[in-house]
Length: 73
Picture 1 (tube, rainbow, N blue to C red):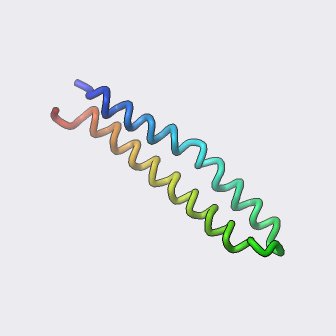
Picture 2: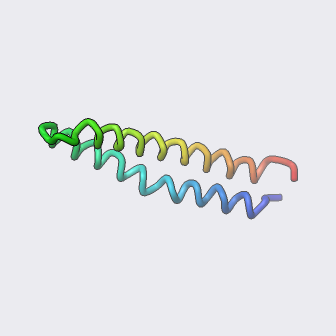
């Protein structure tokens, strides 16, 4: 039996991760094209943090979905 509330929580994590998975690499690419800009290091760190957060949300979402299906309630 699947706990639907926990399942929906996992789907929300994954749906939050999806736009960040595209946004982070786009920011990184944009940063590398504008290396002469004075805000280059700060934007690069921000882009890397976006990528890390996207991966974190993805793992948390998958873990939550698997937990909703296989844990005893």
